[in-house]
Image (cartoon, rainbow, N blue to C red):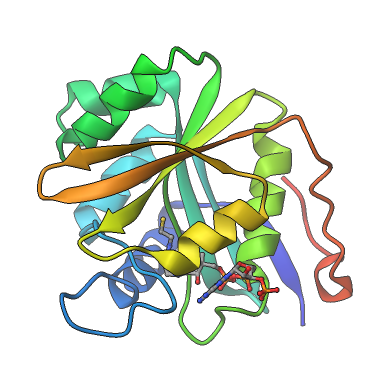
Length: 200
Ligand SMILES: CC(C)(COP(=O)(O)OP(=O)(O)OC[C@H]1O[C@@H](n2cnc3c(N)ncnc32)[C@H](O)[C@@H]1OP(=O)(O)O)[C@@H](O)C(=O)NCCC(=O)NCCS
């Protein structure tokens, strides 16, 4: 199987939206594989991809099986100004309050059901980290803690060297804000299947 890491393009939007929707939080269901509290519509994903530069995908035999959407501080500022991140405003205010400079914020990370727990997420996050550390010093992300704790995702990021900074109540949910120093650790891709990749 040929595994690739690449920057998302306009052609990626429909498949990203499909994955986002397939892992969306539903009040009843199996949460053991993780979930997204805030999947977006096609238009919202398209809008983000058009205005930002830090969305990357993983392809397995040319099929999109995972993505990470991230924003630089200037992209965050412009998205906030346009109102598109109002549902995360308390989280972003908390991150600003930590006083870190030169960071990337990971808004969404997801692997397609059927491909989860097969290290595609690990491959994607490691490649993303190696890309991001060239420009940024730190990374932040938020993970749902309540009403349901996204335990799969918490375990996933802890395993990759992230740590919990604080908990934030945002609208009717509680999120953990996690961070990681990007230039510590080598994040090499050790899985033999995944070494023949295309880096950006
Ligand atoms: C969370 C997610 C990105 C992980 O990607 P993945 O490809 O399934 O994870 P990997 O196979 O690379 O797993 C690496 C490690 O993460 C942890 N992990 C991943 N999925 C887990 C799960 N369902 N339960 C417990 N730990 C899990 C484990 O420590 C695992 O190592 P191990 O298999 O040796 O125990 C993926 O399951 C997903 O997209 N879930 C739905 C959406 C989501 O929760 N996104 C994050 C929102 S913040």
